[in-house]
Length: 254
Image (tube, rainbow, N blue to C red; front, side, top):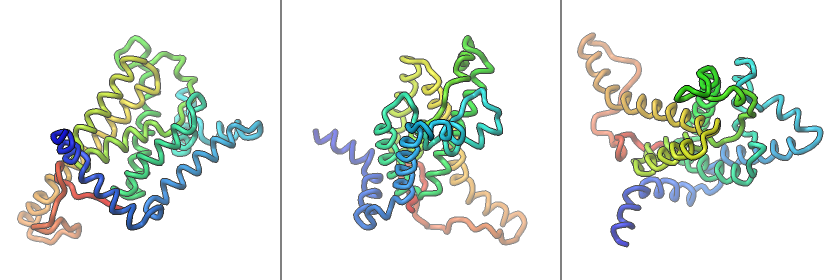
């Protein structure tokens, strides 16, 4: 039991401390974007269940792979807030409140929105690629998936969970989420599961870019200063500045 508790502290300790201290200090004021997202999702769920509102929500926030690309890109940001019709809305609201809330506390509201959109956009674009490959290709999709309404926050939730866990050194959690998404596709191969994998790949690439930039950015600045003898306008981290755990990246809080 002690070993399990120690491993849990090692895995989630830094993340728990960051979230707990911020929420104790600022309470709900620490997650205004998350609360707005929950409210907007609940509102769109109510509207699309009204006889007069269903088509309106479809027109502004529903994405299908058969739609023109420009129209799909315009609808993709709002599609994140439109709950899937075949899933209970309370599940989407709980996911947003938990994962978006933790992400907003740890990395700030605008980074949370950027990563959520990157993950959602990756899933939307993958659907088009998968359908063009065909059902018999390893990563392909049947042509009937082109008519599937693709909405909801699930891809964004997966992407945010992986990014925040990686940022705070919770690598076992990152691996567990990845394995769960792969298992989802193996057990029930469908559009949503493969879009989750696409979101994971997009966020994984983003993590790689951030890590490489942090690792080599300072060395590159020093080399350029030495080579050209000039001062760079874009400053780098001061020698001796503290770095975070695991990836070497500093915790980011809003």
